[in-house]
Amino acid sequence: QVQLVESGGGLVQAGGSLRLSCAASGRTFSNYAMGWFRQAPRKEREFVATVSWSGGTTYYADSVKGRFSISRDFAKNTVYLQMNSLKPEDTAVYYCAKATRAQITASRPSEYDAWGQGTQVTVSS
Image (cartoon, rainbow, N blue to C red; front, side):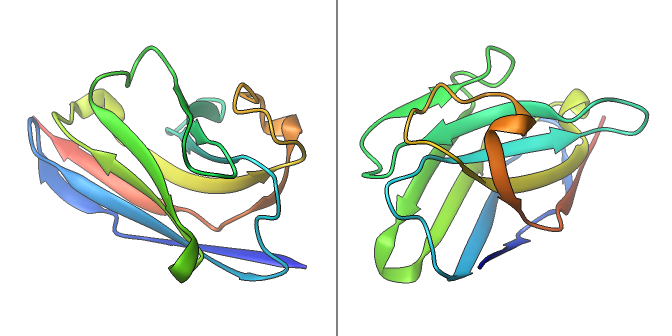
């Protein structure tokens, strides 16, 4: 019942910034956390960040802490991922997802039940 569509990916030089958007439609958000994951070629999908239903609490993977920022806009039914100081190792397909619970500590793919199709982020050296 929930459809998620990511946008905002692209090519950026190391040290640059991008902002990803995740637009939701259908029965959206409720009181569940929203998260971002990423998957690089030949690697497992990994957790990036989550934001609480209210948008007031966030949680980040150590690899992106201090560089990425997740937020929500209820008026637009959209979740954002602001990515700064990008590194080549950030290159991946980025996915937004809806958690099955409200806790922002949900960091495993199995804890999410709706996913977008992904948007490619490529960071050049």
